[in-house]
Structure formats: C-alpha cells, structure tokens
Image (cartoon, rainbow, N blue to C red; front, side, top):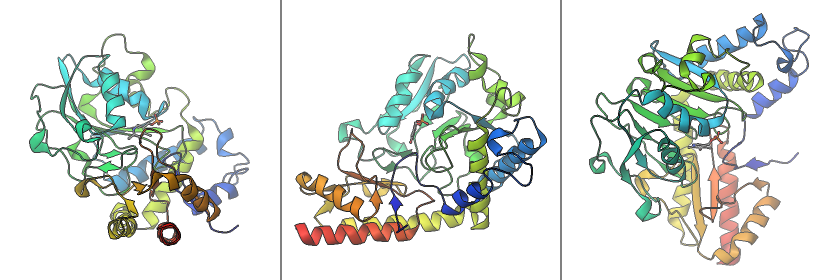
Length: 360
Ligand SMILES: *Cc1c(COP(=O)(O)O)cnc(C)c1O
C-alpha cells in the first residue's frame, strides 16, 4: 500500500503502531483466549486494562489525585448537557465564551438548564479569532466558565489558560487534549470525545475535580450524574471497553515517545510547515488570526473557490484524504492530530505547491 494520509477532523487517523498491535491482539489478548471485545468489563483482564489506561492518562496529563477520571459514552455533545446539570449547583447563571460552532452548541444546550451569560463572542468576525480575557465580561457569581480551547471547525485555538478565580473553569478539549501539556489543576472540569486525538469514537473522557461532584440538579437521570460514574469507577454500566483498550494503547505509545511536551514540539513543527507555506503564497489563505491558529485543525481557502473540486480530486489521487472543509465553512481543512506524521504534512504542502504552479 502506498502512503495514504488521512486529514479527517474525526473520527481521525490513529497511530499505525497502535492499529498493528490491536490487529495482533484482536482474537487472543495476551493468551487469555479472548478478544478484548469479548471480555466482561468486570473480569480481571479488562479491569487490568482499564486501571493501566487510567494510570497512564493520569501520568501523561499530570492529573492531580483530587480529580476523578470518568470513561463515559455519549460524546462531547452529551457533556453539553451533563456539565450544566452537574455544575449549576443552585446558582443563577453560567458563563460561556463563544468562539465557534462547538461553543454555540454548548451554549444552546446550557440554556435548557439556566441563564447563560456569553462573556465574549467572535461571531461578528465570522469566528476568525478568540477574544482575549481583557474583553471577557465574567460574572463572579457564575456557576462555572465554559470555553472551547480548540474550535475544530473554525481552526481557532486558545493557547493560554483563562483565569477565573474561584469560579470553576470548564473546557471542551475534544480536539486539543494530549496535543500539548496543560495544568489540570487550573480546571474544574475537562471533557473530550475520544475520536479526535485519543482513540476510536464511542469513548468520552471527563476529568473533574472531586468537590464538583454530587450536586446534580433534581431529576438528573442516574446515567447523567457524574457521581454515579465516580462512585463506580466508570463501571456502573458497561463502559465502551474496546475503545478504552485502544485509547490505552495510544497512551502507552505517547509515554514511550516522550509524553505531551514532545507531542507539542512535533505539533508545532507540523503546523509551522503548513502555516509558513500559507503565508508565503497568495494562492491559498488562512482565515484565522495569527495568535489563534490551531495546531490541530488548519482551515485554508483557495483564492479561486472554483478550483476547490479539482484540488480535492488531485489530493485524493495523491493519497491525501478528507481535506474538504466543514460544510458550514467551506474551503479546505487539514486536521493534523498527534497521529499525523510530519511526512503527511510535507506531502500535503508538496501537493499544494504543485497545484499552485499548475493553476496560478
Ligand atoms: C467533535 C467535537 C464535539 C462533538 O463530539 P461528539 O463526540 O461527536 O459529540 C464537541 N466539541 C468539539 C470541540 C469537537 O471537536
């Protein structure tokens, strides 16, 4: 098979070494005679896999002991509801930053549970940047402050951590988790769907400070109460066992390769390669403000949108897949998560240069 590079925003590329290990262990995991898919989630084999996986994630992210790590289902989209249900805690309103399509969805869902104060928004500028904290109108009595450090669709990333005093900070890290180190102790809660930068779809990870658990609004379904999952080690019901196993293989690989500081170095090098070219040509353009250019999802446009289809067709012929931008934005988007090697970005830039030469 010749080299194929998959730039999908999610479900996204996984490390080849992980897929190969999963293939080798598919039918018989470590001589158990069972596939991980066939194991009881309460059996000693799977309990061991789950414990190792949690320990590895805690080590990679430096998660303090007073935080629970929950392995759930329902995607980041379910967290849009679970966060307000669990963290409202009798308060009157919640603070949200609006930087794009995912922020908007989180805000829309939160409004079902209480008043939402939008602290700042970049919607008037087509979500092309993230307002700095000096422009935020924070409410000191808010239940929490929610933001989206990386807007997967718009390609807008926030590289600094908001300072919210005693108000818990909540982050939808679906498309930036594990791409660089973060200081977890600055957050009340972090959540992420797995299918961008962790593993297969079906697993959702929630990292939550213990004092925020156990105060869900009356009527919260058992399955939507963090306490249910915290009290039962994420085994109240059947967790997404196979997705957890693959995520565990990814965590081991990241540890072997030098952890999140090394991932950040590589991700900066990969993103620079593409942005430097975008800046050097006027055949293509980046719509995002320089300080907020995502390292994970890089949207770009062709000067002449009439060439979009030809660009995508040629890209596919060169083994460069899933470059079409999100339907709400148009243009192109290259998602270059941890598992995308720099060779993939180099191949994309080479193709873009050749396409420019032919069509300029
Ligand atoms: C993909 C994505 C979501 C939605 O995730 P699901 O797992 O499909 O619910 C939410 N927020 C961000 C930032 C995302 O990238």
